[in-house]
Length: 154
Image (tube, rainbow, N blue to C red; front, side, top):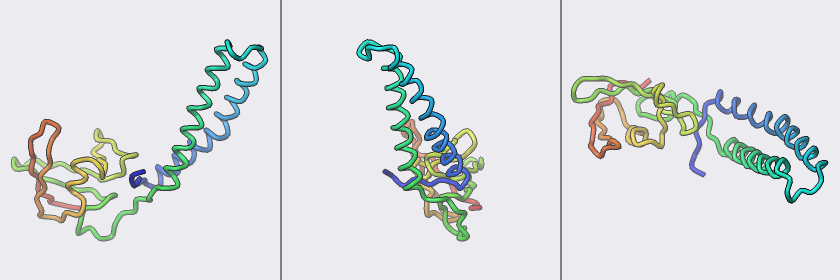
């Protein structure tokens, strides 16, 4: 599993989700399985087959969440704002003078529509470790290179 960077808030949200899955959802599926078994022949029982499939999906999600939480690195705002790192906000300027501002987050919290970009994205990878005044070249999905200058790190 690749490094997962998560904010404290996201970790708490995932813990709550995990607890809900382990307590509420597991109980619901167990009750559905019990009711389905009461109908007799399980080999042709659609309700039972559906409940088993839902149980499989649930257990897979629980497993994935537990592993994610076990391996997660908590994002803490670096006191060293000399270089771009996860948790910091970067202001960029392109050749035309247009500015853009991005906050680097882990891939689980990426939200490009709110300018939260993953450290694993092309832009994130290009920015990590760079300093104010440095230029970065980022290849767009269309294959062209766009050049930015880092003007601020917060």
